[in-house]
Image 1 (cartoon, rainbow, N blue to C red):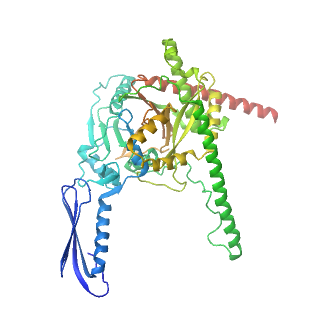
Image 2 (image 1 turned 180 degrees about the vertical axis):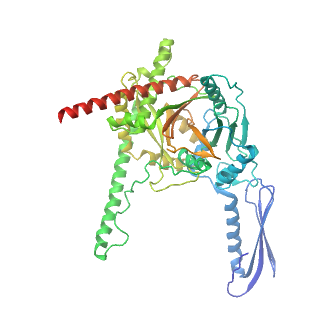
Image 3 (image 1 turned 45 degrees about the vertical axis):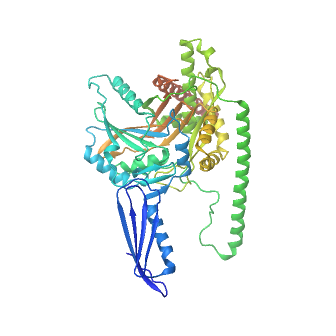
Length: 555
């Protein structure tokens, strides 16, 4: 009940907003002196009957229209929210061979979570807290809330149908094939774009497989959201958290008046310096795009070609530790991302070389990768401000396109150094911010133009690699230990290879998503990745030891 009093000529009226089964909002206003009827069909989609009545007392006739407008706006906002530009872009750019659906498998301890308890947990920690998880997408433009969401349509159960006495490798292979069958399966647009698949007969644990469309959120925000499922959610540090903005003053809030002018001019200098650096970065970015354009498209290889709707997955579990990755990176002043990119390049090179050995004619049929000097991959980058810890589904990411050196499988150290050099150059550019802002405006274009542009750009990349930092501590769901977490990245339109790196409990999980037309044995790529990292770690450790001995001799 809301009361408003305005001047003279006062009257009382009642505003009734009724939501029809057909999806419209009918607005009816009844006054004491006369009856005013306003009918507004605001396409809100199909939903159950809903009626809201608001009474206003002692309100002037002049305020009538404004009050109606305010109340209708509140009601519409309650039921519908506009899709973000990046979220809309992920919907418009997808094609049947490349759906923008992120997925994550969480392997818990037995006996798992009971059906009723799982529904309650999802309702309390996801659908009730996050609007997008209880809303469907209407006309690729808005999220529309669905009342009384039926979770049975989103929580499904699948069987692995394997014997408990099988070898562990065979059991894991069965799970890998089962997860492959879920990849690139479309979600129902008439429902919220997410689903949970339970595999409760997995002998090595209880599998919770979550699929969500990219329009709901990017990898970073989804990791934060899914972390809320845990019994005691752990704060996950976003990449770059704790840094300082270039426009943030280091002065105290309260300064003496004689320093006011100095601080004023210092802030002006910071703003000008920011725009100078940004303009310089844009100039270097233009140079990079010109150079890459002159180099031409990525060659047709074992990893690039005509795509299908069927995907295959493989992943590495408990083979690589975060500490070992840092050991491999430290002697070369590299980052974890540099090491992962270098090992990805090495894995692709080793895989190509092995297939060439099996089929010598393949080198004539394809421009084989190991005869090339480089291929390109896209890297999603979180563009949230350093101080923002946005624990809600959202899409705030841009892309960096970098070159990976190919043909150095016997020299992983040189491969890492070249990879680091390329990434160091890219870090000086505002590429992720430019691509993020560009995608915000691309949704103004017709869908066919967006898809055509994306397919053209896909000619200049072979794969995509994403690195999401999970919790460094063990987490529990309903008292059960989460043993492993496997993340999968959907390759964008026209791209047949997706690599996801996810760290959890001090271990790194690497997953590959490949197209069935190109790579039918992604598990071999995983093995090549592990072998490449092991070789790099051995050489990095040896180099560190040699440097230590040399330093001791010099002293």
